Length: 88
Image (cartoon, rainbow, N blue to C red):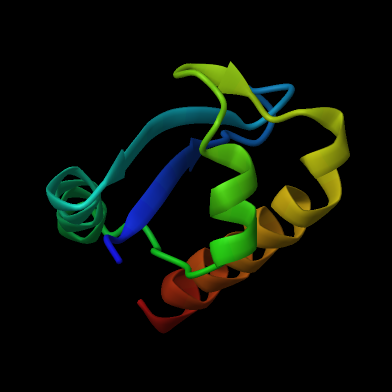
């Protein structure tokens, strides 16, 4: 089965709601992951969430029923970023 990805953008204090900015399957998914890693953007695996978000258009705000899980993902990424800053 091909890899499937969804990229979400959220800037604290700037964006009201996280937005889907990219998605892809197979080679496109691999390229999105490659670009994320090159730019030190965390890549997380959450198959259920990806499958639910994949049907949305680009760009598209996260639907309200997905706020909780996406908020947990964003909180985790923010913690990772804080740890990186502390290590500098």
